[in-house]
Image 1 (cartoon, one colour):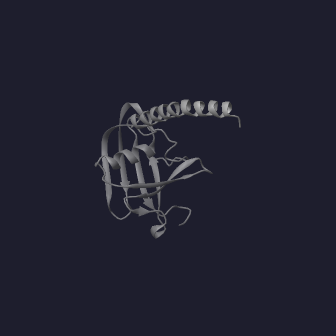
Image 2 (tube, one colour):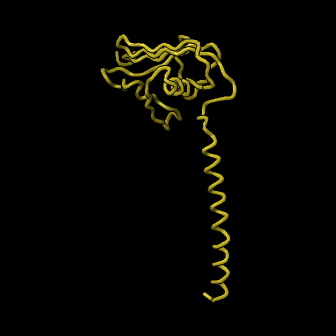
Image 3 (cartoon, helix red, strand yellow):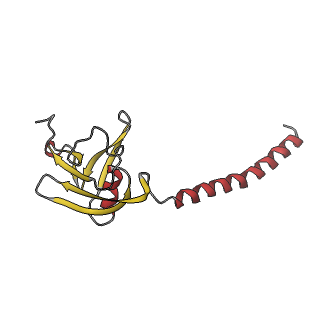
Length: 151
């Protein structure tokens, strides 16, 4: 490489490094400012949620104001706010393009042949909890039970 060409590449690299730094810092700041998880909106609604652990233990939260927009984000939000005081574990299933709730409050799918399923207004939806939007007044019930396909 000629000395002149090497000189031009050096200047180009020196010029690009600060630009890359500024763009990266801007992206990090933008990411940190977005503290609302995906699945939350600007409007608040009032909903109720019950978690039935299948062992006589329930967590019942009625008339809770939330900006969660899906059944899944509601489950996460109510567990984090010390309202329900529970943890949630979930995994993404690409074949369904949806999240599957694996565990709530330490009760894990498969334990005692029980699995988590949810209902909205006493109806069993046929979509993942992260795909079903909730509405004002909805009643969501999570049940840890032996599903009908095993019985």
